[in-house]
Length: 280
Length: 299
Ligand SMILES: Nc1ncnc2c1ncn2[C@@H]1O[C@H](COP(=O)(O)OP(=O)(O)OP(=O)(O)O)[C@@H](O)[C@H]1O
Ligand SMILES: [Mg+2]
Image (cartoon, rainbow over all chains, first blue to last red; front, side):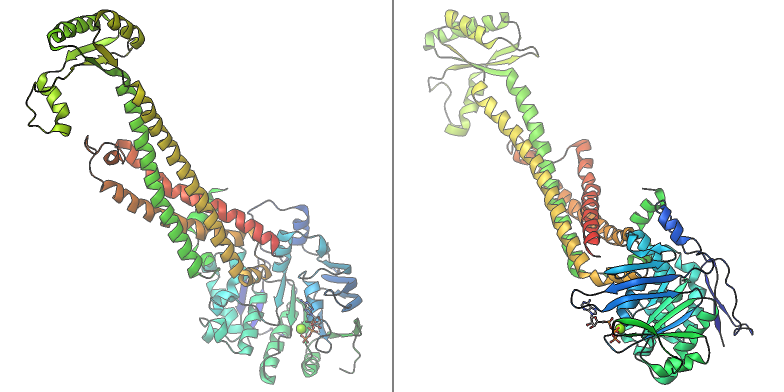
C-alpha cells in the first residue's frame, strides 16, 4: 500500500516503499514561513521545533461555556508528540468544542491552552495563522470553498501560505491518489459524497505537513469500509510521527484502531474529561 | 511595499485570485460606478480647463480694450474726434487708437437692424477703438482730461461688465474642481459599500481561508486587487467614452463662444489619462480601509 512521507521541508512526497509499516523518525519539521513581514519573537517560537518530550498541545484546567451553563469544567489533558488520542462522548457533550479549544478557534473561559509551548490566548491573528498551519484540522462539516474544485481546495493551505502550486502539482496528485480521489479531482465540493468530502478534508489537513492532526468525526458520514480506510490513513500519519486527536462516537472504529496503534481514549462526561477504561 | 508585492498586486497570481468567488453584483457595481464617475470627471476636467482658459483670456484681453464714444452734434463730431485721437496719442499706455469707419459701425449694428441699414441715416456717435499696451493707461486721468477738452467724449473701459465675467469664469473653474473632488469622494464611498458587501457576502470564504492558515493580509489582498483592477478598467472605459464625447464637440468658434471652447488643448489631452490610475488609487485606498476594518471585526 502507498504511504505518505511528509518531509521536514514540508513538501508532500509519496512513494511506495516496502517498509511502510515501520514507524520512522521525521526530520526537522519547518512550518512554511511567509516573509511578508518580520516575524515577532512569539512567532519565531511558534515556528521552532518543540522541545523533545514537551506536549504539543496542553489543556490546563480548562473551562468553557457558550454563555449558558458550563459545558466543560476543569479539563486537563496533554497531547504528547506522536501520540494518538480518541475523544468520545454523547452528542452535545462538547467534543467539537474541546477540539476548537485545542486549535485556538475558541478561547477558554477559564484555564489555559498551550500549543507548542505558546499560550494560545496570547496569540495575535498572524500568529494564529501560523499555528493553523502547524495543526491540520478535519472539521466536522469539512468546510470547503464550494466554488473551487477538490484539488484546489486540498491545495488551499499551500496557496494561502504563498507557495507556487505549479511546483507541487506532482505531490498533489499523489496525495489525491492516497485518499482515493484522483478521479474526482476536478469535481466541486458540493458534488462529492459524504465520504469523499471527508477524505478530501483529511488530505487538506495534512498537505502542509502539520505536527498535529485534529479530526472531528472523520468517519461520520461513511460506511464501515470507508471508515476503515480513513482510519488507515490516520494510523499511517501517526506512524510518521504525527500527533493525532480524533473525536468520534463510533466505538467500533476505536476498537479497530486499537488493534493497529497505541491509542488512548478520552471521554467527556459530566463536563469532565476522563480516560476511558480498557473495556473499549 | 516591496516590488514583489506590488507586482503581485497589479498582475495578480491567477490562483490566488480564484480564492474569492467572483461576485457578479459587486463586480458590476464597481465597474459601472467607476466608469460613470470617470466619464463625469472627464467633463468636469474639460470644464475646469476651458473656464480657466476663458478667465485668463477675458482678464487680459478686456483689460487692454476700451471704447471711446463721441456724442457730438454732426458739425462738431469730426473736430472732437480729431481732438480725442490727439489726446489718446499723447496718453502713455495707449498702444493704438483708431476711429471706426462708417461701414464698421454699421456692421456692429447689423445684428440688430439688419444689413440694409443705409449708412448715415441714423445719428450715430463716433466710436474710437482704444487698446492699451502691456502697462495699461490711467483710465481715470484720461477720463478727466477728455472731460475738459472733448466735452462729447465718453470712455468705456468695460470694467463694469468685465469683472463679473472674469469672476464667473473663475468660479466655474472652482466649481469644476469641487465636482472632481466630489466625484472622487462619491467613488470612494460607493467602492467602500461594494467592498463591504463583498466582504460580508464572503464571510464563509474568509472563515475557511483563516482555518487553513491564511494571514489577514493575504485575504485582504484578494479583495483589494479585485476592486482596484475593476476600478481601473471601469475608469479606463469611462475616460475613453468621455474623451470621445469631448472630441465630438464642435470646434471652438467665436460664434459659439464659451460652449464650443469646452475641451482640451495640446498637452491638456493627456490630463484625463490620469483619471484611471487615480480611480484605481481611490479604490485601493477604499478597499484597504474596508477590508482592514472588516477583517478586524470578523474574528
Ligand atoms: N456556537 C455555539 N453557541 C452556543 N452553543 C453552542 C455553540 N456550539 C455548540 N454549542 C452547544 O454546545 C454543546 C456542545 O456542542 P459540541 O458541538 O461541542 O458537541 P459535540 O460533542 O461535538 O456533539 P456532536 O457529537 O453532535 O458533534 C451543544 O449543546 C451545542 O448545542
Ligand atoms: Mg461535534
